Amino acid sequence: MSGTSSRYFIALFDSVSHVLQSEKLLKKAGVSHKIVPVPREISSECGVCIRFLPEHRDDVENALAGKVDKFEIRQL
Amino acid sequence: MSEIINAKGLACPQPVILTKKALDSQNDVTVLVDNTTAVENIKRLASSSGCSAEVAEEPGGIYKIRLKKQAGAAVADAPGYLSCSTGANPGPNVFVISSDTMGKGSDELGSLLIKAFIHTAIELENRPDVMIFYNTGVKFTAQGSDTLDDLKNLEARGVKILVCGTCANFFNIKEKVAAGIVSNMYDIADTLSRAGRIVQP
Image 1 (tube, each protein chain N blue to C red):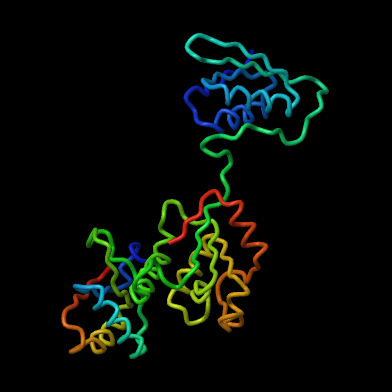
Image 2 (image 1 turned 90 degrees about the vertical axis):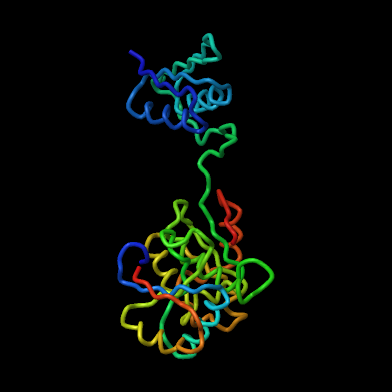
């Protein structure tokens, strides 16, 4: 699971409302993803982000493109 | 020769546990403790395990208790130990998920928070022994739930998951419960009443 391998990517957002908005968009587009806390090594703030498998990276970007302004994708 | 156990400064129930262990392999054990609760509990252990106990008070608030096994002494059943302030043999660590949201105010935010909470449970130092899902919390255990993989992971690591059957029935998801055991109020109330600690996000 998270933190033990780099099997996943995460999308980081600048606000929780963007996470909520993105979650809805990904659900609507049928892209599998998971809400997880932002890893400690990235931020100590109480944040959540969206985790997904590398093969879904394009789907995630397409689903959010033009709808959510700012997000950053990183490898876990 | 009496085996000496230094249980000074140890929190209850450690002195009893150490003494019991020593008595498993020795017939003559001397225990040093620094509080009267430990003295009383070790005396009770002595009588329940067929030992004589001689208590001597030493300078500095130290008590020296010598236990000797008596040949043919009857071994009593469970002794009534004095309760420890720290809780002897604490019950299970129980996590209660009573809702599909976390906190009050915004359910939209709350549903995000509780998913993150459930995901994190497995990495906790004080991992749950049992997780109980009731009311809208049962939705997490159903097929198609965002947290099903987390729950299966927790189960695979030995966490017992109890799902309120009445609640699953109410939400029409009884056939869809895909993690944990569909349980009833007897088991749920019994588990809650025996819990050493209850965590409710």
